[in-house]
Image (cartoon, rainbow, N blue to C red; front, side):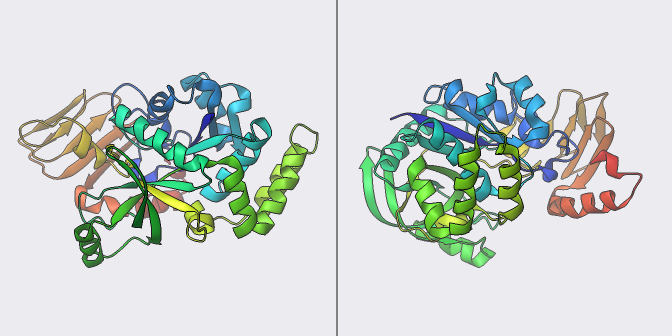
Length: 357
């Protein structure tokens, strides 16, 4: 078995503004330690997927930063004309990989997740790959630690395989982001997992799933595959994306397929959705503040203070997020961070401010 990683580098990372911008989304930004989230994702799988077996799916405009951050060969860069959600991105990577190695097993990993227990992650990945070799479409389920309403859930069924602490289960269904009461029921039942958005499957198995559940897209995908390496490649890629539905792999395939399994994750995981992730993973002072290298929180509690230039100081504040990045500053109450996309839309409507997004 040859395992390849397909690292999805799309997404705008708006909830990390101003640290994350359109020109440099959060997956390319260093938020934890000394490596960007993208670099950490690549490092995490390197022992199973060496650099030549790591593919990166991104917009062409991010080619230079990808090559700056990682030693990526050109053939391992898969450029989308524009974003169409995860199903087209995965289909594009799969058809490219199928021409290179028709027996490949591919692990699909978002570039912006945080996993700190590499050993446990790799053990789960090996286990999932063995299930994928049997033709299963495998996803990772994260055991919930709280009744979170911000994640989709996977309901598990009968056990299909196990090895020590590792276990894989049938999937009874995928559930949308629940309300608080439903999330509490999910947590109590023990049968529900957070949907991680990470997958493992044989390349031929996922292409067969596209053929079964997205036949029009699959036909266009085959047409593009036949044009790879010819003068028609660019034209067929543009046609593929012009015609493709913007849809997630969950809606497009996983909720319809029958040959699916969920592996219970034994590793820590965070999808790093907002600045609040720093609260969960960075050291705090005695007052519960997360303060960057040139930040200061005086007579303040439960604040996040970050800057990449000059200094930022807060005095007599609580529960604030204060971030300076380049030419922009965010000051927000922690409870209001959910509204940051609306704030950015407001900034975008101002012709004099849009350049700061």
